[in-house]
Image: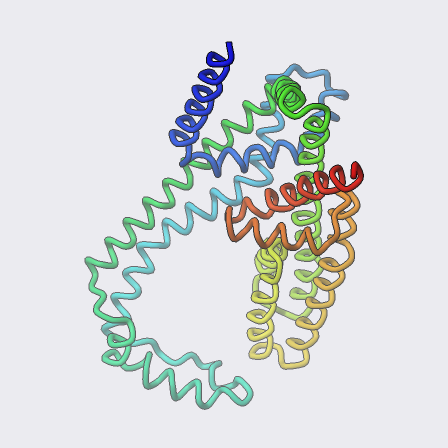
Length: 342
């Protein structure tokens, strides 16, 4: 009997590894689907209580909402980027023949205007110098790059579609999957397994709220400042600021860019005011609001939340923004269990 159990264990492990190898290209899409469904599951529950819809109708409505809020803007951006790839390639080929004219506003930049103009004239306005700077890039090479880039965009669109299908499946069968997953954790690790599973879900939901909602709120406030200061396309810049605010230390990049544009178009006072206001908003959001939302929900010090976010991004990419803090919350829960028991 012992030999049979051993064989069953190794056979199960081999099958799991084979399935992971088979699906490794889709794992990021699966993780995104799981994170989105866990984060929005309370909304699905409220919709189920008030509407009386069945599982399929609930999955359809929730998937449509997620698509409208999260994926339509992404798909729109990817399609436009793919469409512009060919135009960028043709533009690069053209400027290699004519050079890039010095913009009129460059000379107006305080302190840096004159040396920047001289550098531009020597390196970008002169076709020979520009060709040396860009290297030997002919139209065929650029066309090939554009084609490869378009193929990558097409691959991303396919992964988005697969993510949406997974989201629909999880909304439809999420209750059964959650029940069976918790039952398996209890069977493998005892009563603590159920607590760990629920803690992971709470950590993911709190991280989504702390990163996404706080980031978008920061982008909204800073976007209003952009509009008041006269920055071009304040809505787009505000949205971009909100997206970058979800990633630690990334939003100041767009703030510096916008401040530079304002220093040229609206003056140095407007640039400094917008930069200072934006940094103040992000300081409050990142050091007070976000730690409160995430830390209180998962009982995790902000230092560990930050380490989970940064480490998760480094290891898993953008999905690590949400997976990293969840892993740190589980580690902290296990630590408390072991130390409290001793």
